[in-house]
Picture 1 (tube, helix red, strand yellow):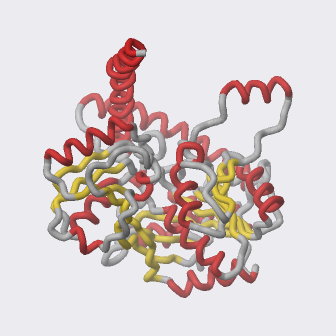
Picture 2 (picture 1 turned 60 degrees about the vertical axis):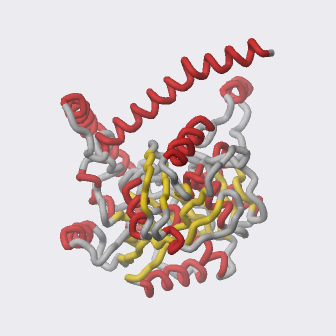
Length: 416
C-alpha cells in the first residue's frame, strides 16, 4: 500500500497539478482578452482572430432572432406565469441576488415559486448512461432537483454554484437544474405545483415563452466594450434591450452615467420601467459555524481574500471600504473548482502574511468542502440587493405577477 500511495502522490505532482495550472492560466488569459485586459503581441493577435469570429457570432444571433420574429421558431407555453431574468453580457451583473429577491418576495406573498436554472458548470451525466439512453431510445432523464422547498438535495458540484446557493437561501422555493428548461418547467408544475417559474439566466432562452423579461445591466461595465462573443462579453447587441419588459441597473453608485442612460432610452421600448439597485454587503458568515460578523468587524483587521468570480475587483473594493487591511489577494477564473491543494496553499500564504481571518464570496463558499482543514477563521460575504430607484415599479411588478394582471411580454418577445 505504501508504494501505491507513493505513485499516487507522484502522479498528482507531475501530471495533475501542472494540468490544473495550465488550465487556470489559459482561462485567465482568455478572460483578460474578453474583458479587454490583455496586453502584449500574443494577446493582440488572439484578440484580432476573436474579433473576426465575433462577426460570425453576430450573424448567428441575428438569424436566430429573425426566426423567432417571423414565427419560424415558436416558443412553448407552460400554462403558468414565467419570468425570465438575464443579462446581455457573460457573468458579473449580480443576477443571482435579483433572482433570490424575486423568489423570496413572491413566496412571501403566497405564490408557489420554482426556479429553473441551467446548472452551469455542474457535473454532467455519465457518458456511459447517455450512450445507453441513445442506444435503447430511452427518454431524457428528469431534471435535477436541487431543492424541493424543504431541504437542499444536491451539492454545488452536481447542481452548479448558483442553483445550490439559491436552494440553500430560499426555503419554500423549488430549484431545478437542467439545460432543457421546458422539460424542467413541466416537471416543476406536475410534481411541485409551481404557479410561478423564474428562469435564472433566461433572457436568451427563447424556447420557453416568458410573460416578463427582466434584463439586468451592470452600470459599471454595461456592454463590456461593445464587443460580442468571442471577442468581448456581449451575448447579443444592445438593441436586444427592446425585448425587455423591465430593466434593472445593478451596482449603481452615486448616479447613472449619462451615456448609459441615453443608450438605454434609445434601445428600450417606450414605457419600459427602469429600476436602479445596488449590492449591499450585509454580513460575514462563518464556514466553521462560529456565527456571523458585522461588516464593521473588518476594520483594521489583516485579511486574506480569494475568489473565483467574473469581477473580483468589486469584491476586493468591498473589503477595503469596510476598513480591512488586505495582506493577500488570490483571484481564480470564474466558477473555478477549488482543490484541497489550492486551499492549503492559500492558508499557508495567509499564515505567512499573519492574516487574522480569510474572506471569500458566497458563490465561492459553496465550492469549499466542510471536511477540509481551515487553520484560520474563514468567512464568506453575504450580499443583498437594495432597490432605491423605481421601488414603485418593483412593487407593481410583484403585485402584477401575484394577481396575474400584467401586460403580456408578447410584443417585446418578438422585437429585434
